[in-house]
Image (tube, rainbow, N blue to C red):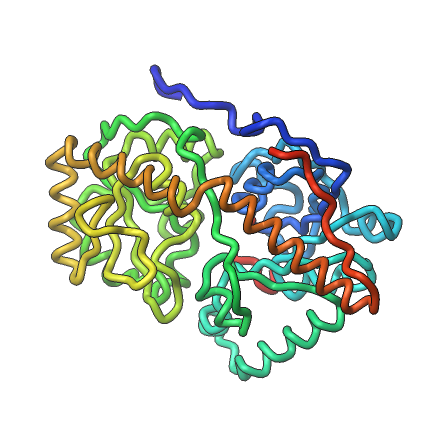
Length: 364
């Protein structure tokens, strides 16, 4: 870590919380999202060794294991007693099928749009039929689905409150803005060129200093070594970049929220779901030329980057706070418990109260 950087240990709970005996079974996919569950007052049993995963165990490069988490296998989870778990968190239909025999409330977290996934895989099935099939299956097993954004959920026919990700500025190093360059965190950009509006990105930032971070071996680009490495890179860059085609992707993702929490102004293409308030916490560009000019402004003016960076952190505190994530997760848990109760033909097995006080992987 760079000299002078201090950060609260992210594995220390934000406040005294007791699991109150609650246990959540979590299918392992998207370690960064699962890492947020350290804020939930429950013991996490995280299932690793699932088929189709590039990393068989927990990928420590992405995030450390949550402080309230432990590793388990699918075999051990299925062999557990009927009252072992209070909730199972799934990330795709394969997860639901793997846990079909486990009688427990199930929460399906949707990380991608259905039509985006279809386009990426070249699938030709009818999306409405797939949505209807998912709804029927969830009803039969007493499951509840939630999108990580409204667009993600609605593309699958799932409406209602989304489960936005969270970030805490206190978990990130104090920004120095020392590198007069931008940063973008993105994986598999070659296969996601359309979704990530990569032609816009390339034209806008090809002549501006920009660090690409993520699993992109065909470009000779690798992911950060670990979370500390990623946070250190956030701390020294001047701004971050995100471009996306509104037909397929949101104007932000979890990496963007984390960059905002780290104090990075954000430059995006004009997008209806961008968290950017133009000229306040970043810029929304109508053209690649505009984006390049905004980037140059931040490269040339570190004081501007600092002002916008402070507003970026305020954006996270308002829209993506830990407290809001915890409340939304508890409501989604209650909805899953109520669905399970209806499918079981009895009263809902509501989540036990806690002491006062999240590879796209769809189909793996």
